[in-house]
Picture 1 (cartoon, one colour):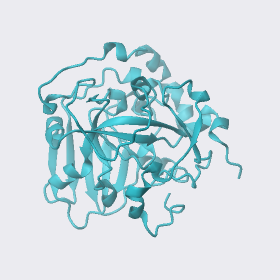
Picture 2 (cartoon, rainbow, N blue to C red; picture 1 turned 135 degrees about the vertical axis):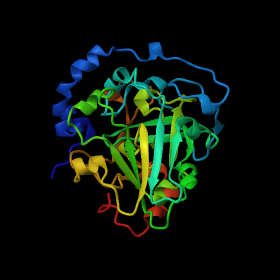
Picture 3 (spheres, rainbow, N blue to C red; picture 1 turned 30 degrees about the vertical axis):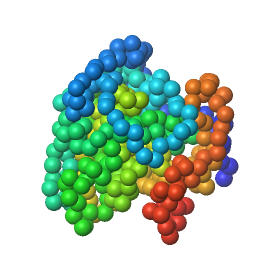
Length: 325
């Protein structure tokens, strides 16, 4: 089978076919929502990170481990070029359509195979551990990548609060279901709500973070406010946004993209240049770094595990990563 390179792939192929064909059902709404997010962005100075929940509010952070010194992707690109199908399948759609998304009040329920099930208010989440700024590479399955200074702390800090049982092998993440606020959920692009999952040892790895901000500010709505996960050695769709439920389970969760297209989106979805997507190669990527128009950005080689192999490769010792892609 001939594998197309990213430069040769049409936009209708980069997005899964049924998502591409469904776009027209809500594109009119995207135009009506307005073109500007940043003009109305409100910067709030709060005394404690535990009180900060609005998009754009300043966060108090410490420098976290595992960072990279690569050139950062500009804030504008990080906040206007997004995959967030709950709002739109177009990259620039979420920034406009998420402008008035309400992130307060907000709770995240943690349940399943745990000794101490608990519902965390967003204030509880923000004060659970010191907020760290971690500069991580972010690689999308579509072939583009960014370098983003995320703000958060290890996901394990939250999971330890509920004391996982010995039978717990996986962690399932569920995003909010709210079609009134999320126009993309009114179209049957995917089976909503969005569900993702990790093996428990992946979720407990110190690289996996519970994320509440970027660039020193609370998460913009279009980037997954008010709380998401970031798993930097996996393709971006594994990092579920706008979380409302975390469930520890014994069996592997059926994550949304794997259910929609199992031959294209595996459960593990580790960044692997040797495993091509059925419609394009994964050997190269386009790094969005503010140096020019996306189509002209120089390609760079994709690194196994997105460059985090020294930290995470041992999690998959003995596994056939072509089979468990």
